[in-house]
Image (cartoon, rainbow, N blue to C red; front, side, top):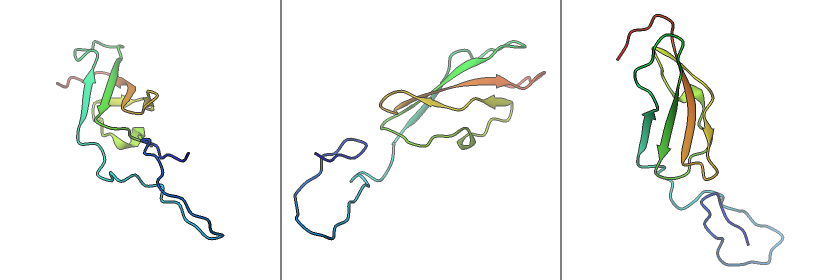
Amino acid sequence: GVTDDIPNPGVGSVSSANYSVDTRPADTTGPTTATIALANSALKAGQTTTVTITFTEPVSGLDVSDFVCGSGSLSAPVANADRTVWTSTFTPTLNANDA
């Protein structure tokens, strides 16, 4: 009845007063691809846009500090239920002119 975050089911059984639980999934390589898409890539003064980051497998702990955004700022990313799609809002720096 025990699963990890992926969810991989637990295997085997044991009776013991001493035990440990390996909570790391068998796949420790992480996602192979992250795709970043802007809802609008041609912003005008005062506009913002939604940024969608899509991963090939679930990701935990994604934080705004994981991104470098030289011509603006991102809001804290929010995940969908399975943590493969994260969204954030990009706010450009005032008077920025950057492709």
